[in-house]
Length: 449
Image (tube, rainbow, N blue to C red):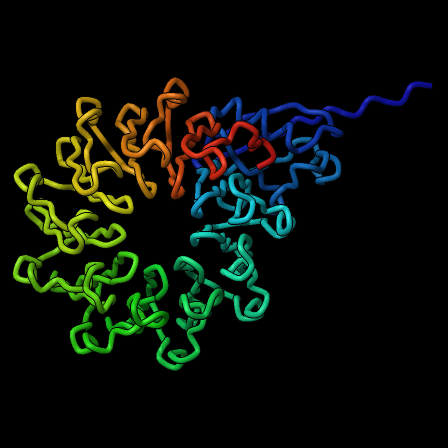
């Protein structure tokens, strides 16, 4: 006798906005099929489905196994996909879901060893060679180069109630709920904060250079650790570091914006990475934003003008474009060049021409620019029409002509050192640049998210 057909279930799916839809599915159908059907009706690429008991449904289970019954009202939460990148690998996730990685397997492109732990991910930070994922319960999962933070087993029992993670090149530091800090990775790159542990109280924000960290405390003061030549020693400017509101860095120097808009710099003792701002100190007033390349800083002032200092070869000299730097809204940097978006949506670039400092060939395309991402040697601009314009060194993603026909409806762009990846409105991925370092995402599968 033939087995009875599984009953059909009529299921209501509600959105937080109040709108809803009704879907019909077999009790033996996987939850994944229900999600896909809802995504198609709602025209969204990713969503999570919550049961009547408030539990996240397992996409691999059947509706029957998940305890879904006729007439149940499930909640659908539309997810915004996100990207993070090490030097040569990418991680893709949606808040509360799992993670997909690709690129160089030795520096984060292979997450198979921790894939069963990558659940309920809220955010991901990336160092040069390692990823660290913060989960909704405040725990941390890391993978990539073991000696550079990919192995966090020695501090895993301390990584609880984590609020924020920050990455240097080969180390991580995490702020806990109580305002203390836990660090791991290579000690000389900031992975050991034991010498300043007693000072790391009420920490509100972390910043990192290549091999040092700077922590801003609730009282506006700053605590640093790591390699002295990379900003780990700030004792010469300690009395100036009061009421700090923001800190940015180059490879070996830090620049802090104070509450009054003035700037304090420190770091590299050779003063070739932007640690010496004395020549422009009288211009650094009411600073609103600072951006760092590898060895130079650019500061945006309230009138939209820009002040630069540091190594001229890395964008520290903007004199050739000073007349064009008016009404600047935001500044971005590759390793040795800067690009500024102006109020009219156009772009001004300076610094090393080979690394994006010369945008002449695409200048007529840089219209209504909304955002820019930077690899080590190239820029990619996201325009208002959701298309992309890239320039700079082709070896670092400066040439996107091979995928230009696919770059339609772009929602977000992220850069590794050598390549770019874009999330499209339909949830698909497009990447370009060095194929071994994240520039090839053709085999990446995202449906299970």
